Length: 576
Image 1 (cartoon, one colour):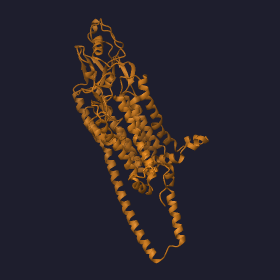
Image 2 (spheres, rainbow, N blue to C red; image 1 turned 120 degrees about the vertical axis):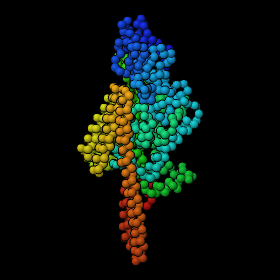
Image 3 (spheres, rainbow, N blue to C red; image 1 turned 30 degrees about the horizontal axis):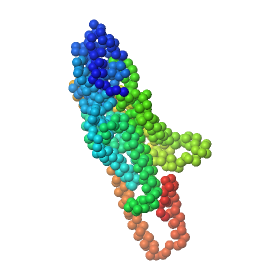
Image 4 (cartoon, rainbow, N blue to C red; image 1 turned 30 degrees about the vertical axis):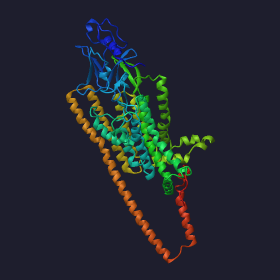
C-alpha cells in the first residue's frame, strides 16, 4: 500500500471544502449553494467543520484522512496522534499546503495511514510501550543496548529465583502481582498530558511484567528497517526468554561431562548437593508462567485488535490493525508474520494455564486422557500436579480453581481492547468489581486475612478505573479550562491510590525478612544444642548398631520427600 502523500491530502481536502461543483469522495455528501463551506453529513464530535473558514476540526488523538477513497476518522493508538493541550481539537486549515499528517500525527517521527509508520530516518524504539519513533542510526550500539537493557536483567532475575529458591506464586502476592501487571498495562487511563508521572509507577510495577531498566532509558532503536510490527514481535521473544533461561539451567545441571572444564562445576555440585534444585526450578517455571502471561496477552491483543474506521457521518466503513494502519487484516504480508504467531501463542501460552488451573480440581482433562493408553504414556501427571500446586497450594482444596480465575480475569480484561474506548473501561470496571465481590463471598484462601486484602486491592483498582472513566468522559464531553483543573485533581487522587499497594508489599517484605531472620537464629540455636547433646552422649556410651540403623532409615524417609522432584528433571538425587 502506498503511503499518504501531500497530493493525496490536498485532493481529499479540496474535494470536501471547495466549490459544490466538485465531486465528493465516498462517505460524504456534496455541498450545495445554501450549505456553505461545510458538508451537512457530519455527525458525532470526533470531527467537525468551522462554518466561517471551512477548516476541519479533528478531536485530539484522532486521525482524519482518506483510506480506500473514503474520508475517515479513526481513534489513534497511544502516542500516535497529536494531543493539543490548549484545545480539544486540532485545526486543519482549508488552504493547508503540506501533508495534514504533519499536523495530526505525533509531533515527531510519525507519518502515513493512522500515523502507523515512522518518518524516513526514524525507527520504532524497542524499549517503548506503546511504540514511539526515534531518530535511528544503523550501528551495533542499539543491539548492545537492547541486550543489556532487556535480556540481561531478565536472565539475572531468574537466576536469582533459581539460586535463592524465591517463590512468587504465594498467596500474599497473588492480588498484588495481578494489580501491578494490570495497572501498568490495560488500566492506563490517567490524564493524558501528565506522562512523566505515569512513567514512575509503570517502571516500578513493570518489574512484574518483566520490564526492568529499559523503561528508565531514553527510547532507542536497533535498526532503520524495522517497523512497529517487528518491535511488537520482539516482545514475544522477550516474554519467552525466561523459559529458555530455565531450560539452559537444566541442561547445565545435567551435562556434567560437557561442562567438566568449566569453573562453575564446583558451584554446580554444591548447589545440587543442597537438595533445593528441583524445588527452585519448579518455582522458576511457575514464575515464568505468572510474569510472562500478561506480556503474552498484551502483545497478542496488539496484533489481533482491529481499529474501526468511521466516515464523517460516523458510520463504520471498515477496520485496520490497531498498531499498523498501513496494513489490512486480509493481507498475507500481515497474516503470515503476525496473525499466525499470535494465534499460536493464544492457544498455547495464553489458553493452557487457565484451562489446567480451572480443571485440576475436577480432573476432567486427566479423565479424558487416561481413557487412551497412548496419551496416558505421554501425560506427565506428577510433573503437572507439582507445578499447579505451586499456584493452588494457598487455596482450600474445594476452591483451588481460583488460581485459574486469576488468569482468566487477566485474559478477559485484555479482551476488552476489542471494544470501543468508553465501553472498554466500563467492561473492565464490571469485571474487576464482580471478581472482587465473588472473592469476598467465596473466601477461597486458607489464610483468612488474604481474602480481605485481595478484595481491597481489587476494589482499589476499581476506584482508579472509575476515576479514569470520569476523566475520559469529562475530557471528551465538556472540554474547557475549568474541566482541565478538575482532571488534574482527579489525577492526583488516582496517583495516590496507585501507590497504596506498595505500602502493603513493603509491610509483607518486612515481615518475611523478620521471619527469615528468626528462622536462621532458631536453626543455629538448634544446631548448637544438638551438637552439645551429641558430644555428651558420645562421652557416656556408644550408639548401638540398631540405633544407627534406625537413624539411617529415618534419614532415608526424609530424603524421599523430595526425590520425586529430582526424578522429574532427571537430576542426581541429593547425596546421602
